[in-house]
Length: 85
Image 1 (spheres, one colour):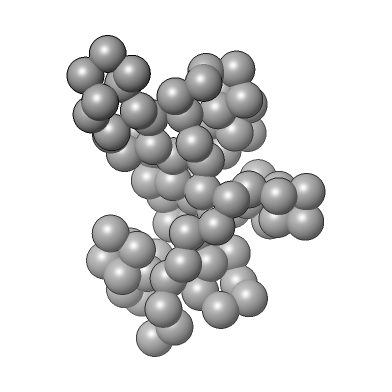
Image 2 (image 1 turned 120 degrees about the horizontal axis):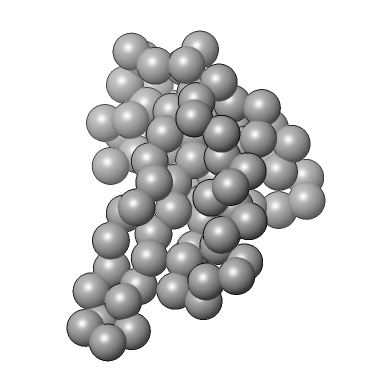
């Protein structure tokens, strides 16, 4: 199993993230750019994009939450979710 590495969403990976067969990621990615506390991450296993996550920092409390976590349908059941968390 490849190590799972969170990486910033980039122009090069945006298409692969939007095409993952999960609940649509496009809304979450757009939200990240209008809400300053949100940070989107592509989840990568080697060169493959396998999932998407987004965290949100609450500026008032300093707490950070995982508010979105998905593994593409075609990649589920292979340990990627467990490795990413």
